[in-house]
Image (cartoon, rainbow, N blue to C red):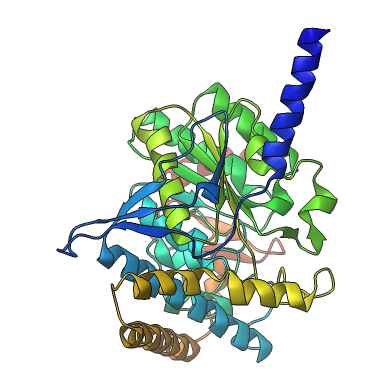
Length: 417
């Protein structure tokens, strides 16, 4: 009976720890040490409430980062927000059609993640993907042109908002949760090739209950894959709050035997430190997969068709914008710590706006795909079959002379069937 009582008390204590909730303030990090030579790293100290851990130690609260790194992250967050705001305006002007999911408010996750990984690492996410596409080697022009359905788009105007890729960014995926097992597969490749790199497979709180997500967890743990399963918990899956859809909203604890870390996703210093920790866990220490949960917030609706105010109050959105904005939080750090003046930061803001405005105009000037482009990009370049059939048997498109020799050799065998 005594041991049972201790077990019950232990469970109650554990429950209270998880129920406490992570802090999502954007400006609680403190300057601990500032070198006289600002080319050297500063030492910052995160709030103790920046993380919660499950079956692992928390990251160090002391973070080393340079002035240039802080200014670079500030500029990138401003630029990503400007790009998403431009997409918002173009959608409302009916120049962008179809699905369009914006990440305004969540910039600390994408920019912080990119700052903490290397070019050799891989990233895959769901449909709120525009910032990741740019940060992973794409261009603002390429993203905007893709949204507009123009030839200059990163997928030649044929993929749209949810299907944008680079050599190290595997999309942009439109099927809820489907990118998570694909991310585990990419991590399997990295382990098979003995590559010193990791895959960050992102998904939202709305996808967290998908069966394929848990299947990917299981396989990744079985094989100790270098995969960081990363939940962007913006608290609402479409129009449903996390509390209404998930019996356990501590998503970082849902990996069973996979350790997890919950992170303040509104403070870019905390996201940077968490990503560094996760990469060290998977790549340097080779301890297998890890779960990250970034607690963040989207200011707009789930997509452009969602006003975002039927399931939450306007006051809630305004409060988050005015008190916990990730860009304003970093701006305050930089100014208070004497790293840049208000005017210098305003110039960075102007530069970001100018860069996005120019990219938008260039994207709008790009032509739409040609009719014959319907037959291109169906297969990976160099692997095209000698012909492709259309909707009817008579509608046949012959491949150019440089088509796949292997398929040509196999053609007689194919005709036998």
